[in-house]
Image 1 (cartoon, rainbow, N blue to C red):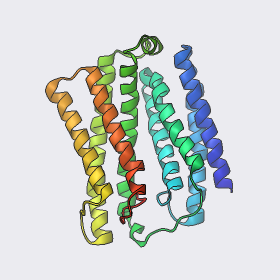
Image 2 (cartoon, rainbow, N blue to C red; image 1 turned 120 degrees about the horizontal axis):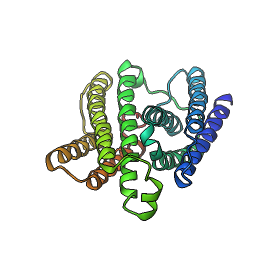
Image 3 (cartoon, helix red, strand yellow; image 1 turned 90 degrees about the horizontal axis):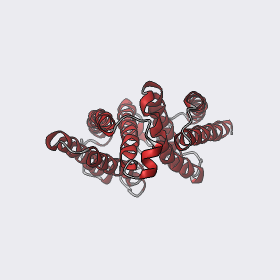
Length: 269
């Protein structure tokens, strides 16, 4: 199918872009324009793939594991491409971010690309709003974890040499904090939109099903991390460790819990 050909081509472009970005950090070269061009080309093809499948099936990429991985790879790549474009000083963080996306790309290649049936509870605009807020949250968190990875890597001699051209840790920590604050806002909106959708779909705002519980736990962990950074004036290293912890919990919430749960929330990420 043409949609799969477009997707696989997009993934190849992402891998080449990520490899070039990692190469630039290790060998201290500057192929930023090439990396950005490859990212943009991959996003264009990926967008065409998602649109083609959407037109064929009549629903968006939010039902099967394959569709959810595809849409999240797209949204995460878009979020990081925007950061890569608008914040040249942090482009070296691609060496941390891209391997995370490589893992998701490997995962989608093992997923079944077959079609899924759309539950009746998904026929609401609040689903799109809920998912959109969630994608912004995860994208902001991905940019933050890239900066946190740079800070932690600099604790080694190799990492210090690789990332010497990036801003000092204090500035990276401040940027990561700002990204996490954006993420907190959008996750809060995601929870509110999700509650409205749940009331419309199942007649209740909240039922403590596994995904709701983990989403609330992620919100709490993120809130505690932001509060601790402001209240206790944490060092960049400690702040970076908190960012990594939040990202791990968020990743488990988005990509783990929905697919071991049998609740109505299953697959709705």
